[in-house]
Image (tube, rainbow, N blue to C red; front, side, top):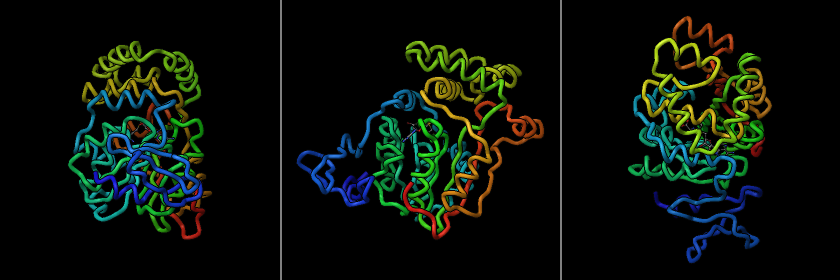
Length: 321
Ligand SMILES: C[S@@+](CC[C@H](N)C(=O)[O-])C[C@H]1O[C@@H](n2cnc3c(N)ncnc32)[C@H](O)[C@@H]1O
């Protein structure tokens, strides 16, 4: 990364005015002299992990990027073919360990990848070979970036981890240029009994120290490798059935550790897109295929599955959420 390039693009998250770079102190300063960010280890930072600490831990611990799978998942969850991204300015809103920022950077996009947590450190390492991918540690609700300046904005599995999913959705929507694309994937609301079981269990797991929860996730990862069990029991208690063991541990921890985990409906997400001034809306189908899978998905029985919408910003949409 070339820090001065991104530093010159940073803006005050409230009034949009340029930030001054103080090289002597390594700080980012607003026009009133207030220090609002710092460059630490090559990354401009405006927040610390806070309630998202489990993600800082998770993404720096597990190695879960797989090039072919990540390209396919990116395309399925954004409706965008990576090959069409060359030269585009792209925002990865909630980059985690950086697997989708890498897909975009390798496709020739100019990427700004943002996360609230120390995950950005791991993401930066994963994309170390890509000068065109730059990282920020910031809250998506208060982005230090110019509004309406991105051609493509995507957010995969992120906004439901904030206290207020809708606030994040609106703030990030403001980053899309008129005519630009916005794709969002959120957790799907399951059947009422699944929601009850999940909330009761998460009330316990989110209070456990990572030193206890992490080994417990290995139990989930073992179960996730057992045929039949990994298609039935995890409709009641979630654990990952990913083919790779380390991904299963990571995905299972990702489910049980975060403080907030809201579940949403397709209608809800479509409404947010319309109210934020987006058109040409498409509900994206799940990545996995198969008649039985689709039937169970449509019945909202698949824990951890998503609601996924993409749309184009109309010319007269509001610019800041
Ligand atoms: C489940 S991970 C998904 C990461 C990545 N999109 C992926 O799919 O690999 C969710 C990420 O969203 C980040 N996140 C959640 N709320 C955020 C917010 N308000 N601002 C910035 N990042 C946020 C978390 O720190 C976490 O790394």
